[in-house]
Amino acid sequence: MKKSSNNNYSGKNSKQFNKKSDSSFFSKNSNSSKKNNRFSSNASRNKSVNNLNGSDRRKSNFSSIKAKNQITKSDAGITDKSSEIYLERKIKRNFDDWIWGKHSVFETLVSDSAINRIWCTSEIFSSEKFYILLKDLKLKGVLIEEVSWNRLSQLTSGASHQGIALQLASSKTISLENLIDFSKKSSANPIILALDGITDPHNIGAIIRSAEAFDCKGIIIPQRRSAGLTGTVAKVAAGALEHLAVSRVINLNRALEELKRNGFLVIGLSGDCQLSISEFNEKTPLVVIVGSENKGISVLTQKKCDFLLRIPLKGKTSSLNASVAAAISLFYLSNK
Image 1 (cartoon, one colour):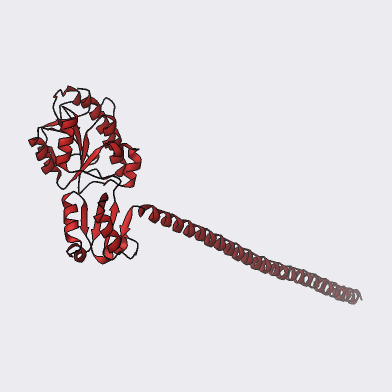
Image 2 (tube, rainbow, N blue to C red):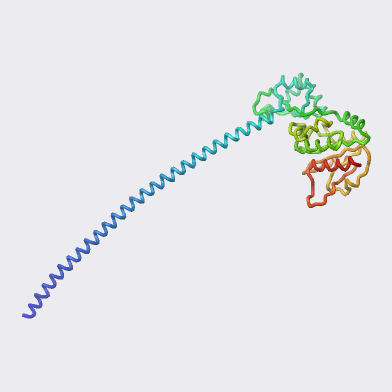
């Protein structure tokens, strides 16, 4: 009886336990499924939010890139426009003293205007109309270059040049013989400056200004490897070009030989020599040669010099600007 009661009790308990366990199991499962459903819904909701955020980010990134591109394009447009205006101004400024075309150039040559440089094709140079005029100008020191038609088109920016163009000079030049005669008549011991390889028009303008200020009687400029008497030279010279004789020679070394035959002593400025300009005491007609800042006086021209003088420098600077060196040397030599 006890066993059966025990069995019954245990069976009841087991049934109840099973019911409880099952109910608790199912309740746990249902809760977990609810949780899982909640998590999954949250995850899907977060995923959708992330998707929205990603699309928004892509849209914002796209819009910012588009805005940047628009700004860049607008900036590029402004830059292009400003560069075009700059180029137009530059071309206009460079062509202020230019003349091209057969008729215009011919009339300029016949009128005996001051000319710095001429560009022409070989057909124009050898033509019956221009040959004698161009040959005479070349003997007077005007630089004449024979170029191709395409090269002349590049120089004139595609203008209708008809095979010839020229650049006017700011002042007329005189022959070497006339410069020698004029300098000897105006002073017992004249000083003439000769420039060797100075191609910067600002330097030449500054040298002309100093030369006129220290009563130099004239300047000799070689036909090649030198800037001509352009508008920039005249502007930097600040009016001195109107009061100073300039001779443009085909060959500088031959011009120095001619000056020597006429009693001039040739002096070259060089930082490598031993004799200081302050120790030079010769009283005679002088030709002072100023070389370029980079190369100085050429070797062939140095051989033509009677003396090589240096300007004494006390600081750490090893050299001077060409125009400054010319001014200092003229100050020393003109006060002997």
